[in-house]
Length: 569
Image (cartoon, rainbow, N blue to C red; front, side, top):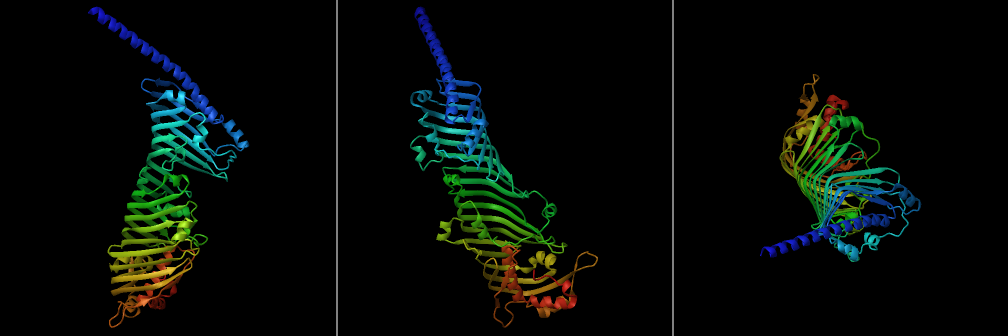
């Protein structure tokens, strides 16, 4: 019995040694073959442009696993210059490295028997990729797809999953004028699934760059604006190709300077923005369109955000004018084709702060819990021809109590920037406007109840006109002047008294009269903005309704034109 066990154990040992020895021999043999094939393939397929280097190779044929350490792909500058002279240089030049290339469930025999690459997974650990796009390069060679370039040596790629994480990506674009644009991304995770490259998949419209689907995740991204005044920041960015959706945790535009530093840097009147949007989702965004440098999105949703604008009117006006800079005009000037079918925003707090022209007062207007729906945001000619109206239906709480609804109708493709804006404001305590009128207009609203304000205005980049009806009651104002000791403001008693008794109409409708409706007209100062034109047209109608034109004349008689309040601002 013992003899039989001895024979069995001996045979088993011999088999184990034979299998191990055979596996070792095959591993060593295939490693040498693989080493030779890798270098040859990269050299020949790139016309000697690229050189592949790497360290140790760990191969296990039994498990189908392969690990290649310290892999690097380098371009040869001498070869590249030769291709430039021959007008065959590619527009994109790559330089890449990774600490490890890990392959699992690899069927190596399929490559040597059938010229097929078949594996369960590829993983690039800590990869770094540098891409340079030189728009000055000229490539007169016949354009080829990736499959057409490799199919002579590899008939088919089939990889279940390809992971690049965490990826460091540097992209430099050299424009035709020699200027450069640089984008750097750190901690980028790319997960590509069902990657298949063959004669059929290259024409499969359901695939993007030969992949059935992929996810891209980026923790943070930032860049400086071309004028160096702002930093654009985003975090928690996720692209889900299968869902055609992009999620962004937060998108911010942060000034690089405080208000005082901003004014000193710019040296002229210019809006300073602070913008933050949270929980953005873009649905129906096609990777194929992005590859063609088109931004086509079905829906955009913004859960919450803030928009704060600051302007110092005591600074000189900047040179030039703002003609051609209405929102619909700027949209049509975008070089990138854009179409957003609907954009929904909710719970956005908006404020506008202004330093007065004399620099001694600061007013502020607030729009709280703003939101709404924007439709047909596009600059694509065919879409504009089908529907030339970009519509924005917005709502907000003005200051503290005013319920505001506004509709913008912007005419797309109109060279003069034609537009219509209509809206309604109701149930507001007018004293809330003192935060604006006291420091900027030297007028205090003692009391007024705004029951309803309705307006409908049409215009273009030259002028605006329309109708306005303001229903209000119990209007009393006080005209202010600065104390000589600069300790605050005091009322101009005589002007305030005459204004409340004679100059202003303290209600609409007045007792025994029908409600007054006015037709304001305002010719735009071409150096002022789109929103300034709308505000000035509305304010013209308010003055005509209330009667402040007469008030201005009374004050000029008492104090002289130089000391007059600037109700016409």
